Image 1 (cartoon, helix red, strand yellow):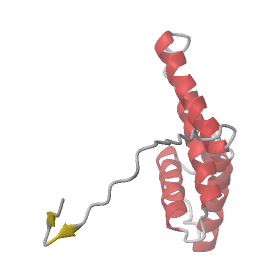
Image 2 (cartoon, one colour):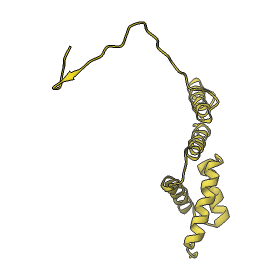
Image 3 (cartoon, one colour):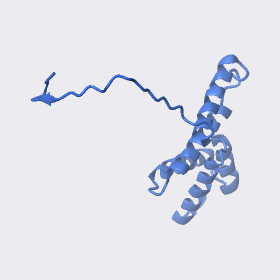
Image 4 (cartoon, helix red, strand yellow):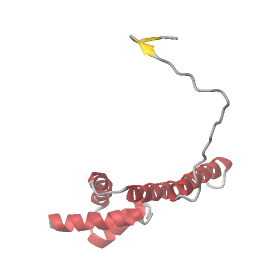
Length: 135
């Protein structure tokens, strides 16, 4: 039976796994890398990945940019993990295209659409008295 990792070793491992997640490495490759690097079994490696995601959420200092990068990594993973029977089909291409659009929005490459409505009608003022419309 192997020795348990110390708390410091475990935190270091989780930090390493989080960096792999940010780099967009697919989950199954992360699990493989964990088993090869630290000699853990697959189930333990999967628990490490799950815990790395969970601890990521708990970090108070995580800013919007980090969350955006994590979401982009997840979307890239989703595109990579498309089932083989859907790859190259219209439905599969549509799904990948939607993922790419979402990534483009998150990266800020596409500006959000803004709609400005202008009317010549003056705004209506409503006064509510005792819970009822006074007009």
